[in-house]
Length: 266
Image (cartoon, rainbow, N blue to C red):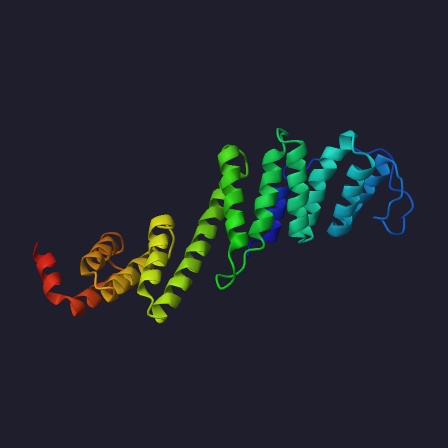
């Protein structure tokens, strides 16, 4: 869905690892088994796994840093690195959980915008096509909106706004799919409510012209020519050269030619 390299670069911006003393030493079989290790060794081993692209192992080792040394200066950074590593391993629910835990314990930390961004991106990466349930899509939208609301000047806000445009187009597409289904069933009232959602809530998306044209269809089938004219007028003002305006004009001309002529001459 998105350029993973570009996203990874943005996600890495605040991840400045603390200097570590010593080395990981001999490889320990079963990295995530509980073996008491000093914080330097654990953190270094977790970073090595991350550098090797073994992100799930890395995440679990960062979790061990927090578990074995919860009051050290490393624990806070390990929480954030755990969330990042789970994200890179495409373990998105785990990434959300780690980032949320960080925010619960350190709500005012300077890296809070980053943790919020990780949560939003974890939902974003799970968005399904419009034929599927859109709960995750809504969660991504809510998370990006929360990020923009709380940290409007952060380095992540501009990317969040771009992602929201794509999300809104996706959500509008889902409403259109349901509306078209209701039309095929002859359920014009339910279809109308779906197309109105697109026009009222997602009016800046690419689906708006079609939604207006389908409102014309639905209103005419409901015996509401005045409402059909209003929808066609909005379509004509905003998308006069679109195929959807031509279709709506032809529809009204076929259904109520005298009313159309009267409105054209007024």
